[in-house]
Length: 165
Picture 1 (cartoon, rainbow, N blue to C red):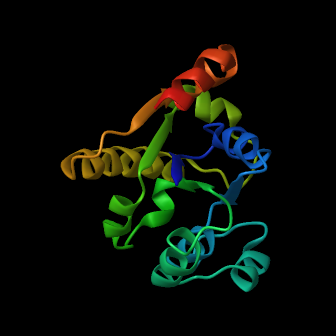
Picture 2: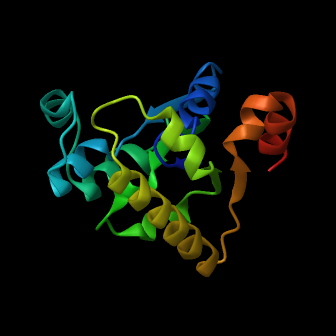
Picture 3: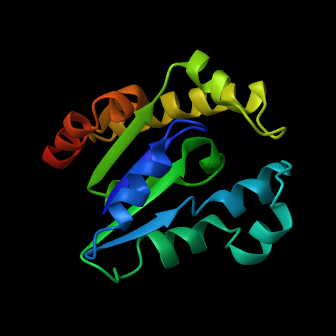
């Protein structure tokens, strides 16, 4: 099981979708999105569709998606750390591999395209990513931290680093 953790506009989608191209890999995209929208009340262009189609309760997401018996030998998922606000993080110790994708704030702001992108949300995502990193390392888990620029500028090197982790 591989957890891909990022913030908005960090380029983690590409990595998840690449993982999902493998026949032995199940890819789950942003399973906590519905939970995040319910807990925060944040607006989103697809809010109602997301709330209707996804679980909005953290224990259900953890037990029935992330830690449920695997359909394929490898399960990868992409999550934004700020979507976990208020959730019990103890489940992360059951995930053997953690990849944190980081990006310089200026580059994230330049990629902002949606009217629902806002500076407060971006700032919160950086704080939550830092807190999540501290949580992992405090539990003795050493995540792979990779700069999003490396994935775009040196994809072969980035993938080799990820695969050797």
